[in-house]
Image: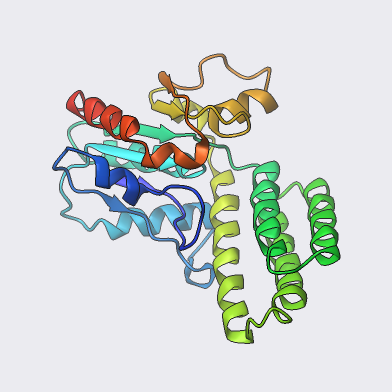
Length: 259
């Protein structure tokens, strides 16, 4: 099985390693590794996908399922489509609170990072950064341009907030590099139109109103009624979705029916 997510140390949301720890299946799970922006060759979304696909190697074992969390669901569906062309059966596409790559998605993630930075002592600087980020969201139609501006705001804000907090230049540069890679990952998902791919997928949804399919329906009320082939809704918060034992049990059950 393959798992697509942007996993970084210290994030509050559960991760695929939490899910795998609760699985009963003996299938191996390989997880995507975030690519640094300066290592990408070509348009960002396709470059991310190429790196993960090529990383499997020419003689990889058949993939039973491709899983995606949040915007990872965009990439997971595309990766599964590629794999379907080279193996006997199509992988199961299993999505956890899948999200579209949109300007509001980029801003929301930027907002969360800024609020986390506020805990380091920033006040007015964070408010100014959030206002600048909102203005950038409204100004840019191109996600790559929006991502670059949000990264610039992050760098300036981290210098003014984290330097007095005692974080040296090397560590601030490392954080900026991770944030830039995250924005590239999110913006890159905009290269794909996932809804047609998701029409054959299974989604496990939390009860968080702004996450996953809940958020998509809230922002696209005129969108298709059935965004996926099957949706399983659970009374869980978005941040707990991948660590819940009942989610692991569902994945085990779904894998039994996978080709």
